[in-house]
Image (tube, rainbow, N blue to C red; front, side, top):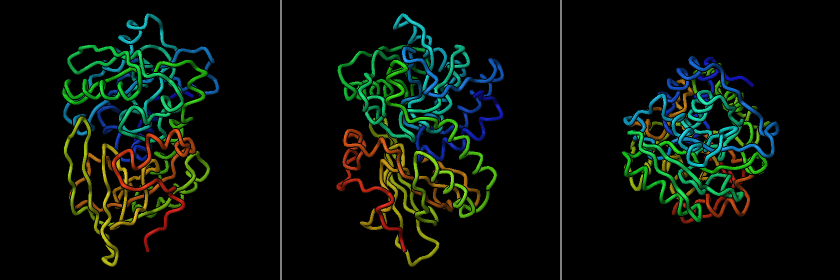
Length: 365
């Protein structure tokens, strides 16, 4: 599969939908990707099954608070220089790159690095959505070590990491991001093609393009996209897709704490017979609930769309007065395993309840 400039609008739109509010705003990353593709030509997107077992693959993306990315803008050369620094650090050439997460701007940065370095991008990612912490990726859950790793800040400074555990790595990379203005570019989780095939959430780049195309073709009132999106998700690795709530944003609270965007949004229904919906945020939309009733929770996906245009809204773009529709999407099967739930269940984020799959939760009435 060859990915050109004409594919970027749909990829960006679909990736924001799957990002569940996180992953960084894709606007500037898309401009960077457009420039890279114009200069170096289309990107090669390789299916995981077509990757050699002994290929050397590394993940690449931005680490930090998404709000910062609206001000600390990436350079066209950040991704490629970070990858070059990683290769210099480990003393070998990388055969392919893959995304941390199919979320917002982080779906595009590996493409920028890959076309500059002349290598393919693997069609998939390590989350099938966006999540805020490194140990929540499928790669470490399946046993891939996070280091050796390299991070580059906005001034071009390089830091290297060699840690004993994914939790230590998360603390160190988050601290470096905070000390470097709030956002960095990182190469981490080097692995073989065999290890990648066992841990990747497959074909999410092509699926994001499909979702973006549906959102573009059915642009308009959010209810008009329920049927085509439902059909797309039903035949995908996600399965479940349901409308949760429609209303107006009446309150948004957000602060940068510990390198994350932490906050909550309150949405008031157009139908005043329904209680308000609260959406808790840690970079991503984590829990949607009315009073004490949970409608959806991490690791399932929660996406907020503009009611009039069906455009997905990143958490850092959520504002008072917006008319929105909220949707839930089932997580890929991988995240329902005991090993995955040990690091991504609601209690891992401080909520006092267990994960219940989206399809087992009652819809509001």
